[in-house]
Image (cartoon, rainbow, N blue to C red):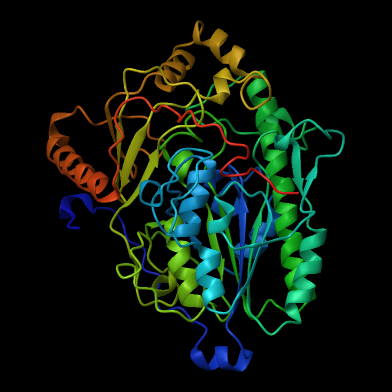
Length: 484
């Protein structure tokens, strides 16, 4: 697919030649490298210390980042849980794999990460949150006992689930003694709502993004969100300790990421960077360099071909019909970029988040197409009444919108989306100034429009207007949230 050069703009960070695990090193290890993927739930990239946050305490992620390459331009394929996870596990964008709405499953015949790795002789297992389906397409060994009720909230529902890493330690202990390399996916429940009720941070400590409204309840909720991030960070530390305990640190690739951004306004269920820009840290045995960051444009769809190549395969994204590309050329210094642009889409999530949208992003520009701009935008943040994640502060936002121009502007932008949006993300990283209607961006807009049409056709995306959830009754969910 050809891209106009005028879209591929922005600074390029050259990371140079990076030491990389050679074939000789792999042979010395004796078997292919193990792969561990830790996925946080609803985490903004800027909300951890390796990405510059100076308030939130994430010492274990700092520890990991000091031994990893940090991808500063990584994006989820969807700002919604199960579509994002489906893309991570298939290497395909949501419409191509079929799981484009939340709680939906991939189409029959789509190959997944555990299937690829099992074919390469790997033992494959998953712990924690599930939210992918149908399970017949994901041949994981499920590590039972890793989803437990949060103490004191037994029987409240799946949103009050904690990650228990005890069974993971036992599984790693056995796997370390086996003859097969392994793929282990650990899915945390944090910092997805519900956030801990007793925050470890003071209200005055937290920062408020410029696209949010600063109120007492906002700060209290933000402190709870930060507490859940630190809780997640402790689980990362435990997992790293397990690898050290069983002497696996030198033959195991560790990947840390998140499924999408947090449940805050202009985050989750949105295609702004706060909703789809996710952290990506990759610790690769043999990688040692003072330059540990790249701004290469990458997507979570790149993890499947990356894992396939780590496992000894030769991923050809065209032959495999993948949207993703292996990240190893970036890690081993053979390339500084693999994509001139990436995509994301949001279709819908139940009866609240029904405003579909599509996105193209280059290093400089973000283009968003809203397919139902006539519909008032609403999400669980302002509509859900059965759990926290908006209800505890939204009334203050509404009240303040009658008192302050900034608050009124935030709520107007939240509820009302134009047909098209264009942002120069280098000059406007918070995406506050829509350039779509400005005359001197007409050529850029025309190119994005043409490319969006071409991409949607290639993906089989024929959706128009408001998303309507299929009224199909099933005895069991096609994409179960957790397993016991």
